[in-house]
Image 1 (cartoon, rainbow, N blue to C red):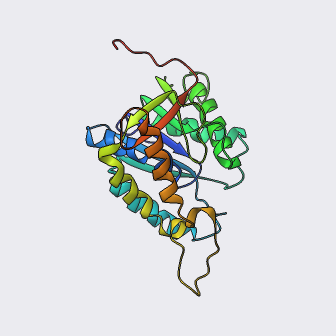
Image 2 (cartoon, rainbow, N blue to C red):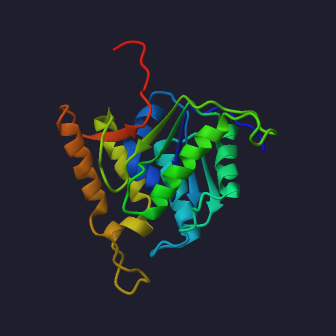
Length: 234
């Protein structure tokens, strides 16, 4: 494994499009500010009802370009098979140690999709193991400053709020890259109706608008943390 230039932020998702749904605006905002941001998709989403693995990878590449990512990878773990077994944990730890991020993001630990929950748990364990020098000793340990959780389908306790008003259009364009998931399709196509192609992007935008409303933002993304986030000044 070849070490890369460290990332400021590494976002994990179970499937290509998870990170964009949950925090595409936050990613765009930090990229615009000069931060190095990467996404790691744990699976190729081969169990998705619409589209193909190959098409989904092309869509992920397009979304990555829209967001201006410094890195994107896919671990190729089995879709609907994120068991947290040792080989999967090692793969996630290796990705963290390769990129040496300051912050790691994972899906919130409660969600209607079991893969999002499994991804959350797997990344949490990987962040912990990444700092253990006797775990995978051939790779230098990495101490992540903070693990932060983003929301995909369900909003619960919001600990952090990021104003994404100026970056909402970029988020929308990144989501629109996933045409196989979010477009209804044309008559005769081999597609089925899912919650994702029935106005899902509009519902995500409505959620982001509602989150921002309380602080006077047009759009915002919410996050949760389990450990206090340290600040030097208010």
